Length: 99
Image (cartoon, rainbow, N blue to C red; front, side, top):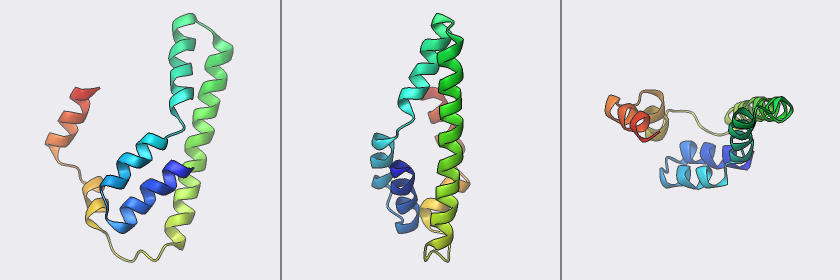
């Protein structure tokens, strides 16, 4: 939730460096690693728990972002929001290459 609010503040204040801070605080890394571990070791119990935790976390983040956006004083689209809505093809290609 904290990473979500940090990223949302970046979009509202039009500040790109804050996005990096949000990525550093991201709480989903552990469940994602657990999914990889569960698939590798064929452990269905860990896989089920991790997928459930990821799904609930994503739903909670979307809900918190919607509420925070609704309550924010934001009235127009900032440059950061515009860049996230329509990313350049070069950035998409670079992001897929880095995976």
